[in-house]
Length: 312
Image 1: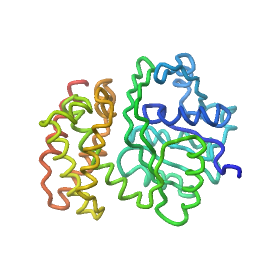
Image 2 (image 1 turned 180 degrees about the vertical axis):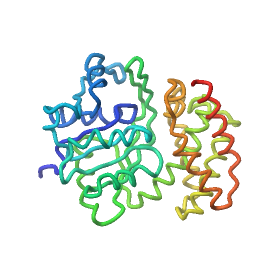
Image 3 (image 1 turned 135 degrees about the vertical axis):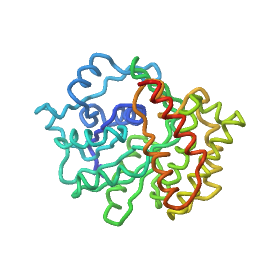
């Protein structure tokens, strides 16, 4: 049976994009997979080939300004950019869409799908999470190191999107993409948000690695406390996150590369903007609405903002 999804694009060639782009490139080839980038990045990426675990990979790049590149039409577009780049990314992908293109967002938080649906109301958006990866991306050296690829969790939020989600599953099987086809994707997204509020913010606030958070009782307590605050708020919003789900994240942390750190901490190291609005910036306003006290979350937010001020 021929796959419904033949051509795939990723918008955002950072840690998440490269982690899964490597497999799309391997199994689909340059004729059917590409990264969408601007003209300046296309020139730079073609002149300085990225290495993944020391292996150079020459990806195919599409530029929205190129009439020749615009001939490529994507059956699936995955947004793997940062949240603050999504508006620009949505403009860049427009030349490569057709009437039945499926859209997925691997962006942290729980807001990007709504933004995609507003921009592309006629297309099907499949809610998605990228999780459990320990990818380290050094943009100055164009080098990626990873030991745990993680997985993409996705699912349809209504019956109209079930066929699209099934097409994605077929593609992921073909490309050996690690995945979970979720039947309760909104709850899973809230669960991942809880974890990010802990691990991303603790590693960023204290500039420490996964291993330190997993092994040092002081930082592990802060990590678990931040997750518990987020869990309380998310449950006030009706998501039903259990203590067992929180404990599962704490156990899973021990399987990550102990010398690596999540994206927010890496962004601070390389003086890039951070997605604080997706974590504490989401939970703290919700906590105020619900009358919930979140002192750990507020302290982490303050510490990260101090780091940001010192790098500006």
